[in-house]
Amino acid sequence: MTTTTSHSLAISAKGLRKAYGDKTVLDGIDLLVPTGTVFALLGPNGAGKTTAVKILSTLISADAGDLHVGGHDLAAEPQAVRAAIGVTGQFSAVDGLITGEENMLLMADLHHLSKSEGRRVAAELLDRFDLTDAAKKPAATYSGGMKRRLDIAMTLVGNPRIIFLDEPTTGLDPRSRHNMWAIIRRLVSDGVTVFLTTQYLEEADELADRIAVLNDGRLAAEGSAEELKRLIPGGHVRLRFTDPETYRAAAAALREATPDDEALSLQIPSGGTQRELRAILDWLDTAGIEADELTVHTPDLDDVFFALTSATLPSQTDQSKETVR
Image (cartoon, rainbow, N blue to C red; front, side, top):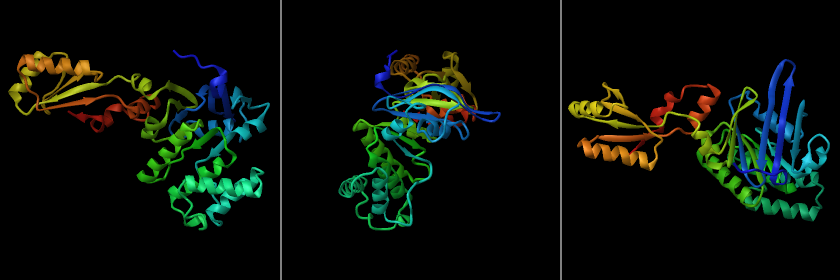
């Protein structure tokens, strides 16, 4: 296991706790986010994701915890933390009554940039986020994807090294979502650390170096996407036959397989590795048996999420996860 020193951490939270009356929202969680990475916090509605973002971005206080952001103690140096971070919440901070350019210049004023510097930074960011042509138009006329891009551009005016993105692609169409992913990848390639909350499992799989699954205020698991997938059993190879006699012969010879007489299929436990697949194919050749279809199922983040949060059963999504070979 790789040891991460405090100097290489953008965010360090140990024993983070928050309650509202009798309701414990965060129950002593630990989060370690290396500099220059994407960290995704997953969880169902009400799991505590947004509360964690609000605490780490100084918007609300924690009840307990040793918390450091950008090398600064959150309780003792909140102003230093604010100077190091940017925050894009679930709901756009864009003012629809003024133009995109005016939104950017307003943010530059809030960061105490000079007029010339503010105009330079605004122009650069509007160009970077492909908003130059729309810069003079009221932001209310922008599409959802354009508003999200403007929102992040405004967040970058202060040149933060740590950015909190709270469900940044909620409500966006697939093309806008993919555009947002490209923006996030570019930020990280520039050395920015991104703390991302999302309910889109594909998004976490695509972007995150590390993923934490939050459930009922506690961390259910944490690791890379591949590490989390290995936590969940259920990988298998499915052989399907059209000839009943061939199916019965295969079922008799391969006793560790789970038969489905109605579907004429056999399910063989497997992690889906190349070695295991080769062994199954070699066995079929040796036995002189030819399956009409072979599909491979490996657990994905949907399975992990469902299993860890008890939202549903992984088997309910099996058919959509199988790859035909």
